[in-house]
Amino acid sequence: MPLRRFVTFAVVGTVLGSLAAGSASADPSTTELDRQIRAATQALEATVEEYNELREDLRVTVAQSRVLAEQVMPLERRVDQLRDRIGVIAVTAYKTAGVTGTNALLTAASAEDFVRRLGLLEELARQRQGEIAELHRARDAYIAARRTVEALATQERDQERDLAARKASIEAEIARLRTLRVRAYGEGERAARNGLRDYTVPPAPKGVLGSVVRFAAGQLGKAYRFAADGPDSYDCSGLVVAAYRAVGVMLPHSSRQQWDRVQRIGRADLRPGDLVFYYSDIHHVGIYVGADKVIHAPQYGEPVRVDSIDSAPIHGYGRPH
Image (cartoon, rainbow, N blue to C red; front, side, top):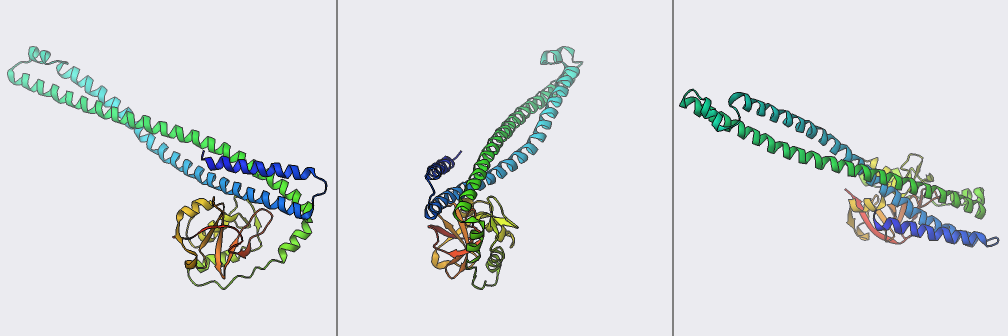
């Protein structure tokens, strides 16, 4: 398991510890609750993107296992066929001319018959050696493929357990954050604050990137939900997946893996529909819409919205292709 996944759990544990300590103090102020919520949601978002990346890795593992399993079956059949073929050659050699040149000499009716029998023996020997060599090759390929399938199956089970643990951790933290938000604002005040946000989006250009912007604008106000890619809720990389899927471009559901798939560009080259990646570990991504604004699914408790491009530390810019 990559080291950064352990780091994420360490960060989340530190944040949870600070939340517990804050909960022990009497009547924390709204400002203090805001600070705790920001810290916890930041750690949660990083964990969500780790979860998304691991889920993408699991999809690859499952696909590899299926391909290899399909390759193993014909190899197994070929091994069986070769074993049967070698048995037939051995029986033929025994019935036709015995197993040695001496037998062929002693029982030959003439010199011509002797030469014929020796030639047959040599041909049977060559066939047998060739079939045995092919059997060894097929057997080795079969064993190697089978071991790979078994290793991938073990890896898949380990990944599934890791996914389950991460999912439980994220769900527990979401429940904790919900309690904090209700204490800080009440559900009504949070809805009122979200309703006051500016959702103004500059006019989208024509073309594919413009269609990406229009799709993203159509999701404004929808809820944040971890690992979601629509149609009713999204996380940050899930919104990007859905927006580009709508124009026929398939991207992985992981901000880090999306970064690996884009053409890197500079800020001066940004066009509406390009992607903006945030934080040194790339655990957030937004869709640039022009006028120094992005549409993104920010974090738990905050709907899909428009924000300044500089609302978080920028890692880089990219254009899917």
